[in-house]
Length: 384
Ligand SMILES: Nc1ncnc2c1ncn2[C@@H]1O[C@H](COP(=O)(O)OP(=O)(O)O)[C@@H](O)[C@H]1O
Ligand SMILES: [Mg+2]
Image 1 (cartoon, rainbow, N blue to C red):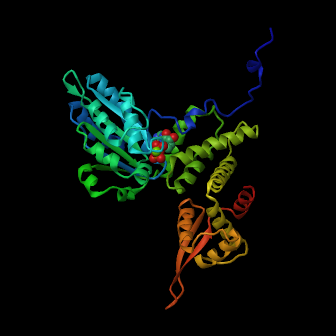
Image 2: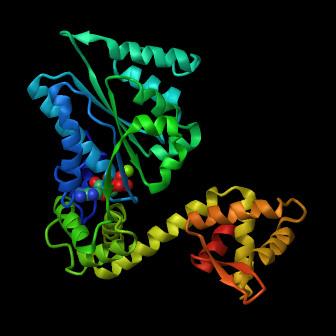
């Protein structure tokens, strides 16, 4: 019999011994520099061990500040403690990008609590009643305490309104931990819900460079073979990610991509230069992904920004609209709609706007600038 094709295949040398600790899915055992925040969550949740429903809690912080990781860490710890204390507690994690409406979240929770419900077709009232019925069951004379982690809650609030929070805050033995990337997500919550939310807030600040370095050091020991990291690499990744709003996910991406680049170059060492190359690659992929998924009219607005940038012109909204009309050849949206597009492109980090005063009596104008490489935008738009 021939030898197995896989065992004989040359897997090549790699700087990695195990890539998974650098992936987004990995949940570390320790979360350095997040003791304070995790302790705060635990101080609210500890009530559950005395069979009291904990207060609702809200976590805020920018992307990559460890919100999801901290919530899941606290979840694991509480479930462990509850088992030791023989208390009937459930902590369910729901990512609101996966379940985007009140109905979907409640149906999912019913399923997880062992009640089979249809994923569509029932009325909202039916699903709410069933959810409450499940929660009303007693085991050994005690009701379940259900803590629900609603991650990325802004997505659900924007899409479906605050009905879910209204329902959950009015269900006796339920406590909600909401996680939001934006401080202003409460603008989606009406007073009737706010008044019963009475939530406690925990802020996750951006990581500093030295804190990011600690996080990267721990992960790199798990991921890389010995002596493959040049001494510049972690300080560089940390400094670059600290500049990008203290984002640990970005720091990990830089490190892992730098490792990929070392492998591609058959290098047994990860060099500082590879971190710079990693930054460009990540930036490049982000920009092309965004441009590729923009709606057509928005791509035309961006194309107009590009044309004016290439002509070295100062871009006011008026001038942008003129160019846009030429680009879209009759199939254009209104001048007012253009402002929405400009805002969205700015939020995506593709362009920036800056209001300048034209001097006395001449009013103010919005000046638009491209925020990513001209050539990259050009190439991406032309390959659509
Ligand atoms: N204090 C920390 N220690 C170790 N890893 C961390 C820490 N904070 C964040 N991370 C890691 O950084 C990445 C982003 O964290 P995450 O919790 O997803 O951020 P957020 O939810 O705030 O966007 C994850 O891979 C996570 O494991
Ligand atoms: Mg998160």
